[in-house]
Structures are given as C-alpha cells and as structure tokens.
Image (cartoon, rainbow, N blue to C red; front, side, top):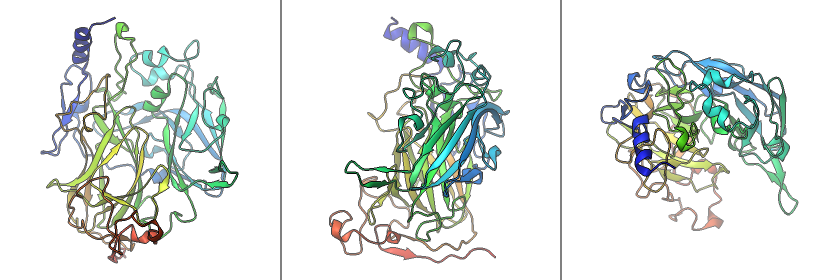
Length: 469
C-alpha cells in the first residue's frame, strides 16, 4: 500500500494537477504539464471552426431504422495536430464532420429500431490507446481482451435488452456482430396510462462492462434528439432550424500526444495501475474540435449542451471581452422543456458528466463582438478527483469555444425575456425566477403559470430580423 507521500510524489511527476488558465489574454495556458507528453501547450486556440453536428443528422422521426457501425476512424481534432486514430459511430450522411456519431432525430411516441454493427477488430484498442492498450485490457471481461461494443441510449425509457445493459447482454457484441435495440420513445406509467416521452436531448454511448470509460473516451458517443408535438424543430416559438439557430454542443476534455494520438495516462501497479481513478483532459473540445470558433449572427440561439467528459464537472458561461455575461436562459434539461413560464435566467451552467441543458442565448446587439465560452473550476466541494489531470481550484481553466457575432441579420422572430438585455448577471445565477407579466415570480401561482411558451417566462420583446436575400 503506497503512502500518501508516495502517492503525491507520483501524481506530481505524472502531470496530475493540470491547471489551465489565461482568460485575460484569451489564450489557454497549461500549467505543471511539462512532464507529460501532452501537446496542449503547442496548440494555438481558436483556429478551427466548430463542427456543426446537425450536418450529420439522421432523420428517424417517421420511425426509420437506423444502421450505425463502430469503426476505427481518423479525425483531425486541431489543425496543428496530425490526425488522431479513434473509435467512432458511422452511418450518417456526412460522417467526416466530427469523431462523434451522427445526430439521430426521433419523434416522441414513434419507435426507432437501431442496429449497431461492431466493425472493430478484437485488438483495435491498441491502435487508439498508446499505452499499448494496458488500460483497456486491465478490466476487460474477455480473454484475451477484445474491443467489443454495447451501446446505451442515455436518458431513454427502454427494456434491458435494448438498454446496453451488461446483465442483459453479458457477452456484448464482438467483431462482426450487430446489436439491435428498440427505442419506443414512450412508455407506460405506474397507473397503466401511456407515458409520452418529452422532447429532450439524449445521447448514445458505449456501455461495455469494464471499459465504458475507455470506449467513450475513444469516441463512441453521439446525440439523440427527441422531438414532440410542441418542440417540432419547426415551431417558430423556439429558435431554429437545427443546424442554424438550434445547435447541439458536446463539451469534452481530452489529452493528446504531439503526434496526434490520444493520451491516456496510466498509474503504477502499486496504485492498482494502469487504471486511474478519473480521467481529466488538458484541452477542451466542442463537437470534436479543440478550442474551436463559432460565427453567430445577431440573433437568438438555442443550444443543446451536453457534458460529455468522463469525470470533469463543467462550469460554463458565455462572456464578452469585458467579462460580462451574454443573456442566457435555461428552458429545459434531461426531462424536456421546463413548464411554460418558468425558464431560469443564469450566467453559468454547472454540469456533471452526462448532464444536459437546453438554453437560449441572445446575441442581438453583439455585432462584431468576440465572445468566449469559458470553463472555470467548479466550486469547492463539487469535485474530488484523484486521477491524472486534476485541476487546481485557484486557477482558471481553459476556454472551450470562442464565438464571434457578425453583422448579418436573420429572419426568425422569437421572444426573449425582458431585462438582462445588457448582459447583466442575475442576482442569483441558476436560481432566480424570471418576472412574469402579472408581476408575480414564476412558480408562485401555478394556476397562472400555464402561459404560452413564447413568453419564455417573462414579458417578451419581439425584434423582427430579416434574412439576407
């Protein structure tokens, strides 16, 4: 059993305690990472455009059968790095968009059948994990270790045999085999009445026993966007269409070697290595790109945000160069849209791994303005990590995404809450209830809270904007 002194000595030498900062200059800087092979310190932020995941969407809203395969893929995660070898789900119309899998668009109450074919060779994990696959092999349930798949729809109401449940499918799916899952997108309540699954962002990821963390960090993940009769994707009361003003944002942290390969550190045998307790990256990726940029119009956007990190709790906000927050309103989460009249004005999203938020951001009046999606260390007590890449709470961490507002007008008319138009922060971020037309705080009078969702919980200000001709 190692002593505390031995443990601290090992974590310091191996690069634990990565702290990333530099908001004042706009450039993330790595700290205490010199002893790792990480390429983070060599990368220039904000060189690459953010991939638009909806450009690789599969429309299954009519109940289409979806065919996806798990393959070895190569993707360039930063223009200053060579291509990275990863795992990925493929089968969409534009698979090169990102290492993340296609966005599956489904409809509440309409079943979808998904086929996931394992096109990985048994030893392909060695191609991805440059520690000779030792982390992958340590707890792999097969002898010899194999790259198998068992896909799970996170947030779905499913039977065990369609849920990527290792108890229901203990052998998972070996090379050449196909997993078939039925997603009813509905269910039955305890009283026998039908359960209508609300529109929300779900996501698919691998669930292999002993190697969930490894297959996910290798790239086996993708978004599953559920629509319903209100949130149709074309309802003018919500920003859209998808791919333009409704954008999924998958935020992840990773480490990479200077040759572009994935860096997954290992612990010494006396610490139960090569296993590490938690994996933390020293670069942030949004939709599969390191520190990307996104050009936004002076319009209202809807972002479907997913924390796709293995262990990191995110603390995200969108800020201007003067550190003032962009008006942001939470309108939904994993359970779908919040009740009419009850969005939450916030300047920060604190998100645990796999957590999702549905937010509205108002970029009107931000013309030619540079904005940043900033990630800060989570509040003390929210996180207790023991693995490589542990951050220090006294350092500001890396930005994830730079936004730039341009001058192009748009044509969607939507309502946003009054007040907070100058980017002022709410007095109580994450908890403040917006003011309603009747002068009461939302939630105090539920019988009066059943208002139209275009109010977004407050007096709407309609600012018609025209599309370019």
